[in-house]
Length: 122
Image: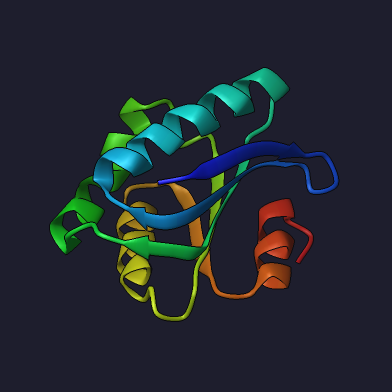
């Protein structure tokens, strides 16, 4: 499962772009990379671009994912936006699970709205 991690100073955020099929372990690996990059840049905003990725995570694991990602270094102090294709509606459930636990997470299928929310400018 290929992915890239970069810092986008224009937003500012750490941006993780995933392509291909990914499972729970791959998401945890990306979270570790995102946490490391965010700490290195003193940045609390993370943008996951999963529009070209396919999900292979059972719904029960999506429910547990907020806690698992916190164990990888992505805690409640981070503001996380997930940019997904319209076919990835399961992530709406993930957003609810995160928000119910106090995490700042939103799921979008539009890049403009993603950046507006992530930067707090809207």
